[in-house]
Length: 79
Image (cartoon, rainbow, N blue to C red; front, side):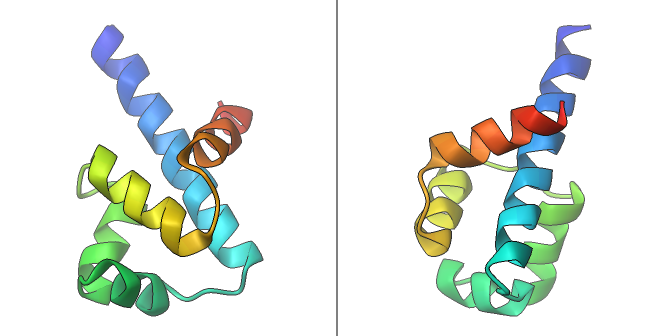
């Protein structure tokens, strides 16, 4: 049960990341470049096929110029 809740929370955080990226009119390609990964690899993070790591969360928050706490809070709004 806890694993299911964790997955849901991460999914919500990823949704918050996507929403923030789109609000800033940033493309997946732009964020991927900021992270030093391919657009395809970034797309897999947003779609949930690749696990969102703490390192990626920090790097994404820096690229979006927001704190990771804000991204987590936005994710919780979806939960």
